[in-house]
Structures are given as structure tokens and as C-alpha cells.
Image (cartoon, rainbow, N blue to C red; front, top):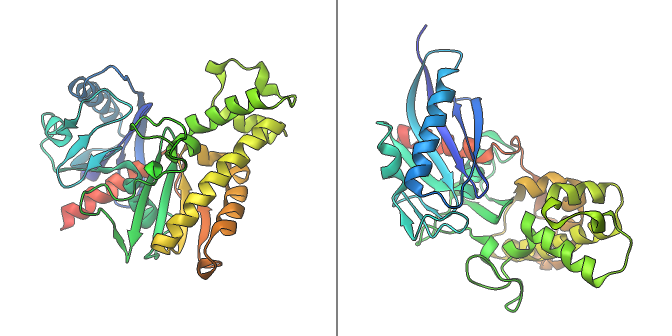
Length: 321
């Protein structure tokens, strides 16, 4: 049997890193994830990741040839091959991540911001196929953004274009891990939703099942489950989150005039409880020239696998160039 050509797609996150072997049709083989360790160095992390990739590769059901590695990560700089000022992991100011990976693999390696990777995945394998102007907003540990304009992923002069999570909601608002106050990420991420619930529990006297939870047990998934059961405070938390997100998406539309905005990431799994009020608020805040011109929808990619597919699409594109 002839070896199957595969690329390795890696999605580095604040709480876990996922990877899988991807063929040219976007099929992921041996999808695996490993937990993050905030105290671990980048060198130690890459060594541990390499061990897990090696174990996963042994179980592939066919002989294969690894053609390249694509990586999606927060704060990744595509041109420099670095991860810079990583917020959730203790990796210092700048890590030459491609150099670390090449200690273990003699194949082409490319890296890109994780939200940009999801945008590439959406463009090649998801609902954005055929679109030339769209945004992807990732709602997870943080809030990320990927911008496609005229059919091309936008990097900007700094290489960090698309950081919608660090646009400002309130200059005197919540403290963000980036050092600023009032970033969108502090309100529209999984952690932001949890903070909103905690505020509502203090300020409101409504009966709520959320009052019975310990802080450590409270996750965005549990808050969603309570909202789905009709819990007043859980629903209010989602509405508050949707209002802020909708407002900032309306601003993004004014800047970029996309055909569509796709929501991805763990918080987007809340479905209609999040997207319906977000769409309502976005349309409320839109400048009238844009009303009816932009669709808000969920990612067409399998949850948790968008950045892997996008990173795979990135390295395949670069291999052809």
C-alpha cells in the first residue's frame, strides 16, 4: 500500500492542546488532546507534545508520510514563527516555537494565530467556502478573531490583525490578563460569563440553582445547562454577554462590512441561548447602512477541531506555493 500523505494540525489552547493527522479532504485521524500546564516551559511542553504525537501516530490504520506541520496558537506570529507574550502559559516574552518543533521533525512547519487558523478552516472546509469577506470569532478561554477580506486572511503590518478580544468595552471595566481593563475578552469568554454570574449573584436576589454551586464547580457549560432549564440568573448572564458581544460585532461590521460572522469555540456551544440575543443586539447597534447585509451563524466545523483543520490547510497551502 502506498503511504498516505498527511499533515499534522496542532491547536494550542490555554487549557489544552489538541492535534490530529489530516488528509487533503479535511479528514482528521487520531484526534488527541493533552492538558495544559501553566507552570511548564515551552521546551518541556514541546517535548511532552512530541511524545503524545508519536504514540498517536503508531495507531494510524495505514502507512503514512508526514508532509508538514501546521500550528494554531494564541499570540502566534506567522512570519516570525514565534509565540509572543502568551497570556495563559508561562512561556516568557517570545518563544521561537517553530525552532523548538524542528528539533523533533524534519518537515516544513508553519504557525498562525489560533483564531486565524479557525478562519482558514472555515474557508476551506466549513460554511465560508465561496465567501470573500467574513469574520470568525472564537469564544473560549479568551476571545479571538480571524478576518478574511477579498478572499485573503488579514495579518496586518504587525502580524496580529484580528485581536477583537482586546478591543475595549469599558476603560474602567474588568481587569484583563493582557494588562488592560475592560477588554471584550473579560466579558464574552467562558471566564467572562462566569464573572457575570458571580456579579449577578451578589447584586440580585432572584432564586437560582447557581447559588448552590461552589465557585470551582461553575463552568460555562454548567451555566448553559442552568439557562436551558430556565434559570433566571443564568439566562440574564447570557443576555448580558450577548449585549456586549453584539455591540462589538456591530462595530466590527462598521469597520469591515463582512458577508458573515461565524462564532466558534466552547462558549458558542450554548447555541441559540447565545446566538439569538447576540444577533438581536448586533442588529440593534448596526449602522443602518449595514442592516440586512451580514449573517451571524455558528461555525460549520466540528467543535474543537476548527483550528486543527485551519492549521492543516495553512501548511498544505504553503507546501503548494
